[in-house]
Image (cartoon, rainbow, N blue to C red; front, top):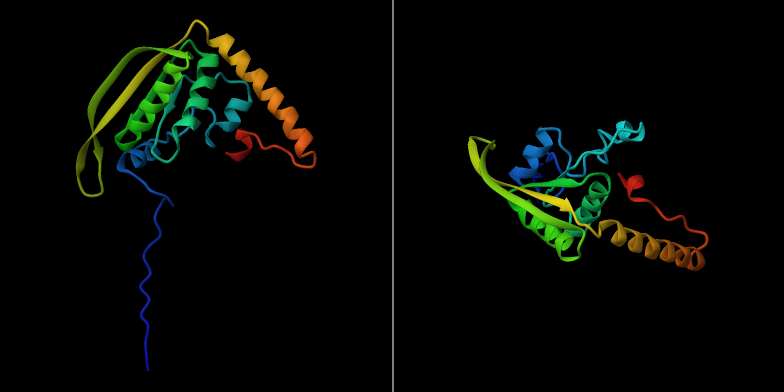
Length: 173
């Protein structure tokens, strides 16, 4: 007789790669997305509230996603803040670099500090970064060009796939 013993591990709170920094943001009630587009505040933003100027990064999403979110924030505000802790700092730097390199924003200042966060057994120190960006003078011109290209692409999508409905980013959240 052969017996198999199955040991079941308790489920994790999140199903992906997680860092202590992203767990801290979750405990604070701050979702990893632009304030107003997260699930908790989606209903409030639909009532006409202005969206905030803070973008909080985690290591779970790629830089292009945050570039899109930061452009939406810059569309509503003259200055934005990009916040990141731990492993998400490299994504934050990549996104801010793209915004500056392509002329959407200019760098105001960068702040890096160490903060204490509660780990599983003890408090640990983690790096935290805040990048302050200002809307570039030619932001509106660049966004108008991008919207024109987007409309052209949507027309091509409808011609190629007339039976499919294109999902918006807000539908996925």
